[in-house]
Image (tube, rainbow, N blue to C red; front, side):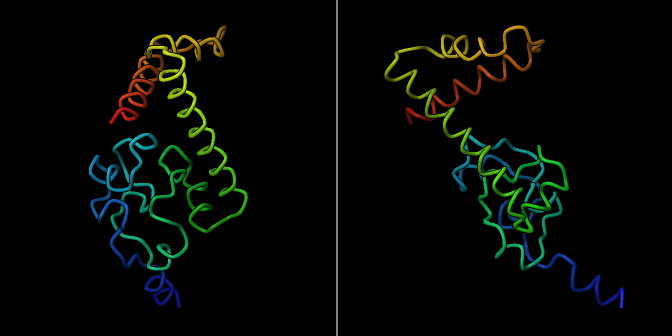
Length: 152
């Protein structure tokens, strides 16, 4: 019986997110229009395997923004299984990212703030926290990326 179960649960389809490579690259990110949501790396849709169960493609959209490798394996599995709470939590995080992106665009285009001024505006929230220089650099670069992407 275990042999039959293993055969039925074996991945059968090429991952539509990474196209079977096991990792998402900039071409995949551009193809799925996730330039401001994802970075290249191990594919969260197939967990780096390059293959998925055939029914997974019908369960969760390949471009589901909040299905990323920064989630635990358990959280990713819950999203793939369409768990309501996990899906809603992911949608809420994605909405927060979308609001942030729109705020940065507004502050730049209407408020005429440059990336460094926008960075300083948001950094006020983290006053008193021990924030690494690497995080600050990544955050500023993300703000610059939003602004550049907005002008394309």
